[in-house]
Image (cartoon, helix red, strand yellow):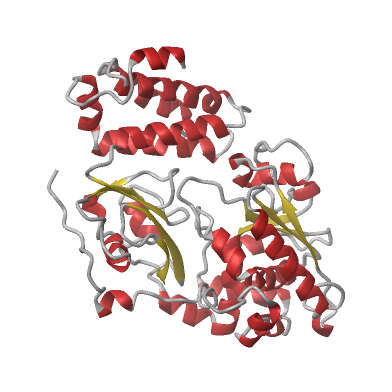
Length: 444
């Protein structure tokens, strides 16, 4: 593989600095940004007042025109998703997915901590658009502080008339419930989230029917990610054309890119959609001293890894897909030439094995046995046939499990075999020191 040079630790160029677009994150560093009074000083709840002057159907059309797409992984058009909720006289629900639990993903938690009122205002606008009078935020169980911030924001908003009965004299009523989950990754899958919210064991449902018509309590339900909802007030205030002007074609607006791993300044970087990894690494101060980029995940551990050759791929929905991966939650885990893709995959698969709900056989058994194959390879007792075994296991898992957890678990395996097969063979042929010995594996 040819060596790829990425920017070193220097001040980012003006062109790269111009990629930074603090829209969703613009309040994060303001003192007391989570309080309502600070939020109102910084344009807070102006978008709600504006949205309430629209007819609900017109608000949905506005969101479709903006090109806003979901920030939770799939990138589905938001206005279209709202439109799927039928106007049939039934009770409707909005559910916000705040069960952020995938390895590398860390954008929603700081958003809820630093700017919870943007989530509440976005909920009020979205609920008005789909004619929902009750909304739920499903927060990951471990995120105790974020849940407290949200509950405080709900109380403050209700006190000021932004929630509750006859919001701002519009005749629209809305109650918001902050629900803490039990701390299971599977509950990030929307139908498992709904079952957990209803008090059942968190397991994915067979679809169809889909949540838009048979969601929470079998009523029409729209499910959006935290980041998706938090962007809504900004779009309503700025306008559809403004939002489209920021990003790239078919990928409107900004995105919070979460950088972790072998960079000097890991953290959240909100940039226009289509920013490249090379530019993000430059913003993050460059690679750690003595490290060169080898591979990275564009959207968390469930997205196929990309190699250093993809450093200049625009990180938007279409271009990442063309490169063979998924933008996902833009959780960019950066690995260097001193990191091993085989070890990384083994650790991710152990996570997926542990978090599998066990409802379907391909996921329950497939992840368990792939972990065992990886441990055989990493102990130095693997054979070339193990690589075919991993490929066959992925074929039987991809598209054959109840939900996306099974599909996501195969991503690291197939992509690492595509780009870094030699790293596997080095363990098999004895050119690499085993990670642990066969006795340890047998005891495990």
